[in-house]
Length: 267
Image (cartoon, rainbow, N blue to C red; front, side):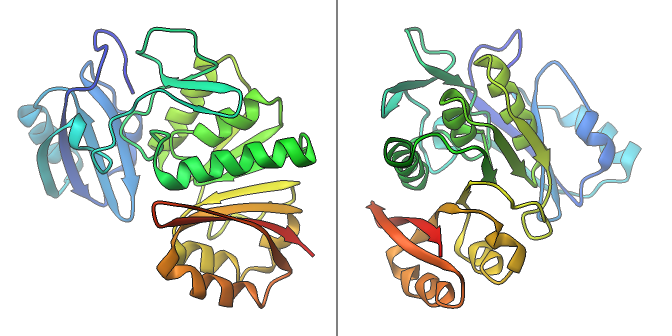
């Protein structure tokens, strides 16, 4: 995340360690962007090169360095440079843009700069849901990333709970709620072991394999309505086949740049 004296992201200095270390979650340093931990890898992101500091951390925590790189921010996240955009009545922008915005956010280095097709599809489907069904009593955002969907629903005054396995996503989402003066519960956890799916609307912008796992879990169907994305047209038949064995029925389908989003109802 951005913090003084840094006012923008330019070059990301990346150091990845096998398995990481729990103490790195609370590690702080003036040029630190954040600590990413997922899939058995712990990654520190800095605004400046930190070779000597990283060597000290390797010795202190007995770490194994597997990734060392410097990447322009413009090349990060599929080269999708965060920019202002609009969904429904809301003008949304990274917080460093001047102007009158309804929602501002720090995209950091996690997924969720807002304009990826799956994110936009989920936002458009969310606005359709709100227009057609009104405000749900509760919303659960699975795999919240930077928290764009959480912010959108919190701005609409929904009671939102967000979940992500990546501790940096949790920190970024909490920070983005604070930036907007919004409220929401943000939890660190794995959707594969999460159990409390009892809410009116479940948001799941994940990936095909994880969606297929969720479709096999009985407790996943405690929700009433579902917006799911993270799969392409080529993956759609496999998703449809998996849904045949569930109580979920397709209500609306959205498509953008080969990506697909479903609005599902529990029958």
